[in-house]
Length: 302
Image (cartoon, rainbow, N blue to C red; front, side, top):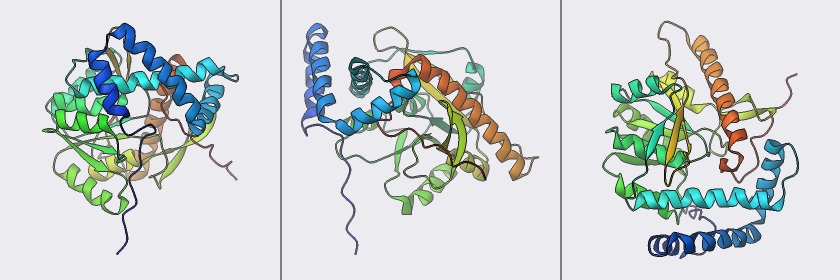
């Protein structure tokens, strides 16, 4: 009998999340924020791999080698995003505004009750969007990588647990069965569509100046189960804890078209999504929270 692989862990000490929760709640903001800034410098020093990936990404999006302060800003934006999740997990209200572009189609889909596939990326406050869907009365299954010390996920799961369930991508042997059960049970799925580690079906699309590989699984699921697809993002709106939610047009499989035609329509939809995302990334370069190599360039066609 094989031994299960040990769970991955977020960087940092075992007491880190607990300390952040306590300090953010009881220390005044004028004191806590400089401490968080100083802690970000410490993380920058002791996370060389993430620091290197941040530099490489920022060089692409900025069009020049980044300064050390810009790498720190990238790390600090992630720390800020983590604190927002921790605050949401303990019940702090997060004011939300929906951007007008595509808002009507998004609202129609949410209120329709039809199970859907909600895609996102490791950008901005995307981790919170699935929980916010549950606040609209929708049962949502969130695809996540199980992390041993992910206190933010635990707190959010406890707070929204009546409508939220998790499908863990660490267990690919059972994932397909779990996906099928969740979809056929009427749940919507919330999944990120940028990392390739657990994807076997990747396709090339234009993003950040190159033809790069991205997972295409969300559209394969849409065609297999006849589900609409929409992508959502969230960025700070300039107010304390405030979020601006943006969305893509909705992709709906055409029952009158064959699979090849639907897949081609899906590819055009995803390219438009990535073009929209690229505009947001260039506007908010520090909100791209993949501290990993950028999606690889696709092999040249022969």
